[in-house]
Amino acid sequence: MEIVLALAIAILTGSGVYLLLRPRTFQVIMGLTLISYAVNLFIFSMGRLKVDSEPVLRPGIPATLANTADPMPQALVLTAIVIGFAMIALFLVVMLASRGLTGTDHVDGEESRETRL
Image: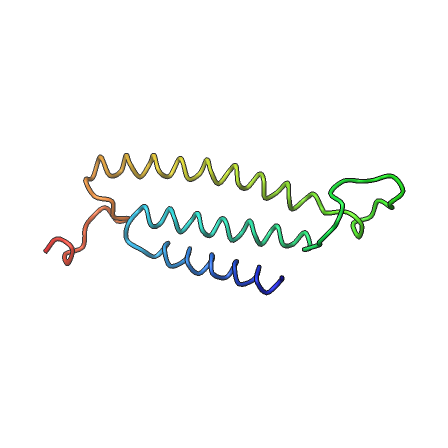
């Protein structure tokens, strides 16, 4: 299970970096989104992958992290999802405003000479 999770994080990170290096603003935003998903998966995996673990305390079971799921990574990921959604919404609004002002959606504000010809 750890190998599958590590591969998923690596694929999301690699795809995100590739999209960050693209010249269009929408691709850059999608790259940031993929990298934030990879970071969320990484933080979530730091809470230990444990199957059949109790999410809350139960009577008769000792209250140790060996017997229950760690709630801190779950809370951090939930907060990161909400903040990431707000960040993407803000970036999309800024992207639309930039496209309206400059007439292009390139990151540097200018189309390359090859795409104009």
